[in-house]
Image (tube, rainbow, N blue to C red):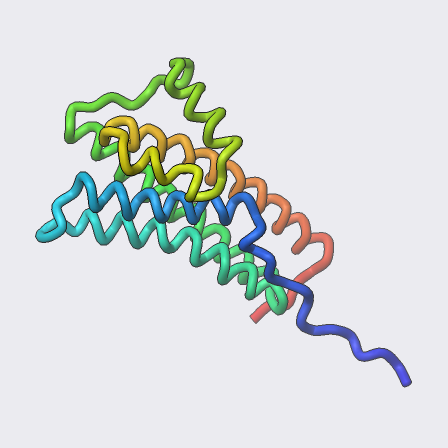
Length: 173
């Protein structure tokens, strides 16, 4: 009897991805930042920021599930995750501007230390104490760093997904 080809490919395991862990830290950090520094009522910014952060991690998860049947859908969802980080990045930059605070310069000691910390720490629990104790300007800059790192990882993921789609083909809806 001939073997029946698999239509649903192996998928999942997204919770083990560094990019997912960083996206979860971005979500949790955004929720805490909004609670501490933005008004609870009358400002859509809180909803927009938390939804953008949530959308990133949810689209990584959904893309992973979709990968079993559609590489094209996985690519689209990964791209949505990436795009929502662009939106969230702008919100943090806007906060800095509107509060007369500075974005850390690329070559500053603070930015360098933040990049090194973010490279080594993907889990929310490793960030939580910082978000409970640091001022808004520091947290905005930390979020900018981790968002930039997550965007970089998503860009690499998209490149790999596109190469895999081109090489192995994919199911189109």
